[in-house]
Image (cartoon, rainbow over all chains, first blue to last red; front, side, top):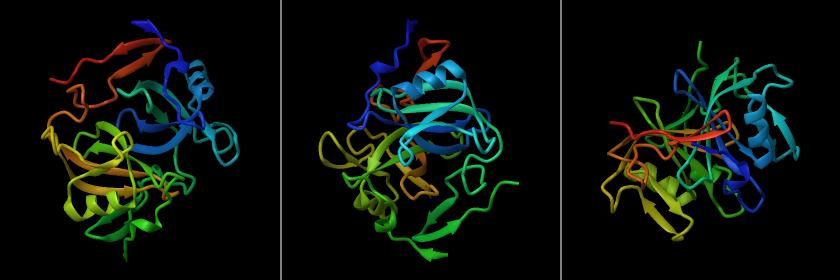
Length: 119
Length: 119
């Protein structure tokens, strides 16, 4: 065991790394967004998953406006320390299309199919 | 249903997008790597997950040297079309540390813990 310092992660030239959100109990991959070191720290401090919005250039506390919050259950770092997996408890839809997961487009045998929203 | 053209995905200024690999039946998130449009096309054509290695600047057919291949089961695109989720059947370890998943470092209450490899 050692103390964790977000500054020891490897960020890209924009100061960001990709963060995958996974529903902790079902295993469903919900979305991918980006974090800077401060977003990682805020996520750990508050227990509410906080990204960095590239389009708005500001912190994005997931669900702050929609109510579709992500409660942090566990944070995992990959072997290269340049990617994060947040195990979360997702309230409602993670996707802005009101689907549970952003990954609803399936490509099979060269054809695109939109998966139906979960019940 | 429509035909899928990898060029319609949104790649970053390096021509890459992040690709998450998830074991299709257990839901375990195995790794994150990068693909360019041609790697996406190769993955779909061959059924073997193929990334673009940023460090080697070459295609990386997962498992080509290690034997730890990833067979494509389903490819999912996210709502912004700038990230891919590959549902795979992973042979052996996905991680170069010989662990099943690259996400073996857990951060809880500010402390770092290395998760044990799966049996």
